[in-house]
Length: 497
Image (cartoon, rainbow, N blue to C red; front, side, top):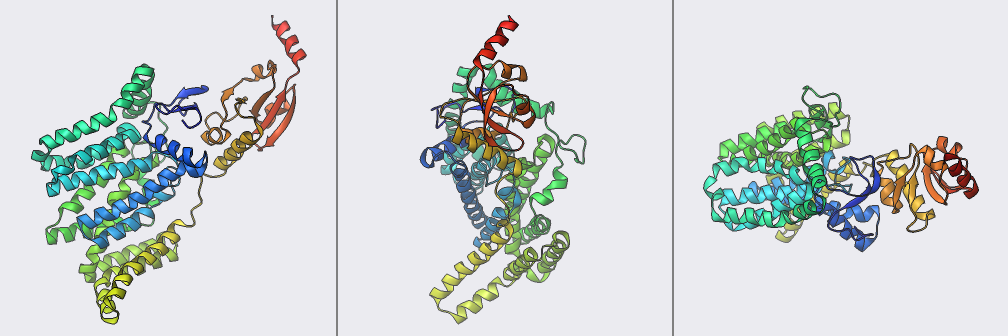
């Protein structure tokens, strides 16, 4: 987008679903996230930082949104705990498609959560004037990841059934109209220019293929035969250490809600988490698909923590048991200690607050009531998040170095040729190389008659008959400046004819 001005339709050389290496349209997903990243790269230059910055910002905004939801649904304390849980959940900060990458899943969580929260406020508080904003949020979610936004519609389905009169209002039809006006222009433009190719990539490949399960990547270890990913086995690590606290917290939230006649919020959050998880258990084939459940799960834990402050004699026993399980399961004393301190603060929050009020002035009390929770949250975030390395491992780093070497040694505008067995779908290389890319076979290398920059493996390099200069040695793949002997190439061509 930035280099060639292709802003309306994203293009790339290495398509994730195709073996053809050429400058081609990427129509699998709407372009909103790519637009955000392109704007960032236009400002800060083409770099990993610029590509990841919009997603990191949306992650921070998501945490703020989770806090605001918890505050609106239950209390400020519930929102605070929920936001800390959200940002320290591994599927959010450490997953290959999480907040530290430039993927579409975290933006989908952000815009989808706005849609769900605004819908909750509209229906439960009769705030129909917010319905146009619901439409805007829905449109942004669709423009982020297409049909995947449908899981958030499933989440709010009970609200629609319960408050059907609001759903049938003229304001709701206006909201739907806003969504259509914002969403439809891009797919209409894409269909007009690419016709069947657009329909194939965005619907048949991304929706119909997933619905039928044909031709999809599957990971072994699933409990049921119909599953294509072992979500039940891996969700504990995706939500560690909070997974062990989730079910006790959800039970506490429902119990307290039943006693105080405010059951609506915990039941809705439980439905949101279970319906999203269930949908991807049936249709998903990657771990990061269930990322949206991090929001309702964090809120359930926040509500449970808030309930502990009022029901701690009974509920602290349940929470303490959960912490004991955590210590045995993870062997992480630091995590357990911090969580234990957090539970004590939860249970004695009112008493601590009263002691502070008696010991300090009103101004000092207000400062301490804000500073102490923030410091504790900072310590917990550092303990859980700080040690996780950025990146996807040695493979990613190797292709990043190869791409940067290509950008350094190859003149601007010169094409790069991928030789036999060279990486065909390594997007890190394409991103950092910033050069046109094509490919050749072993037979075609022999007939090259012009100076060429080519990526080959050691075996292919040892078989080259042309003069060449090694510009970068990456071990598995090398960057070579190939200098063919024109007379030899002409002789080869003559023999062929």
